[in-house]
Length: 299
Image 1 (spheres, rainbow, N blue to C red):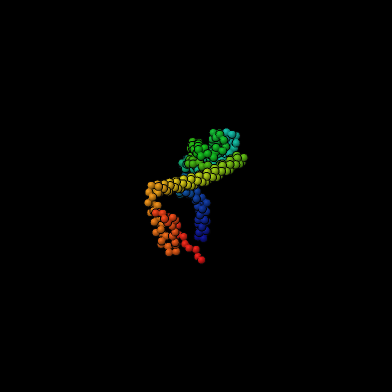
Image 2 (cartoon, one colour; image 1 turned 120 degrees about the horizontal axis):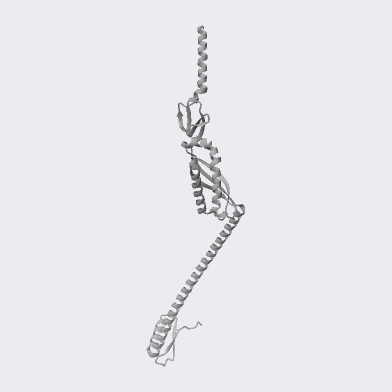
């Protein structure tokens, strides 16, 4: 074999080796993304040890792989739930769950993929629990009560945990997202709310009217008390004036000199007016009475 043939044969060998490495080399290692677990099977038999996130070298190139997402997921379910009054209420529920990484080989062997776990275990059990819990609710509108919703959530959570835990599924929460009553019940509730709002409005109007009347009564009472106080003051003043007149009359009757004193005071006042003239009645009397503030008429 010539040197050229040897070089050509060596080149072919190298190319074949490179092709073999490209085709089969990746089967000797396995890279698992974050939040996932890879489960291997060899000729249909499940390998009991799962391969968690990261790079695994070397691995059996004959393995077939099933990848599981073990991060927390949320499953949404809507179901018709009958109550004791034979009415069906639509309830939307969210279930927070995750697959346990160490149980994924058993999950693959007994159930299958994550989607199959949902369809075989979680969804049927959730619907069954919803129907069972609905039987304890007397009326459809009771689903709107806070205590009914809390009891429903707790019962669904405990029921799902007890059922799915042996199957390698952890359930962390069950959330009620929406509750839709039958249409005629909804209309009846809305009508009831409107009537209640109208009653509250009438009560508020009646209370406002009552308050206004009480204010008017209070104002009238204040006016009455003020009038009584004013009348009382007038009575006191009239009594004082009457008492003064009585005392003056008594003084006049018992003391004739009092009249003289008043006459002199009047004359004293009249004398200050230069236009006034004073006339006396019965001037011969020892006590003549003056006619005060009489002036001559102009000619």
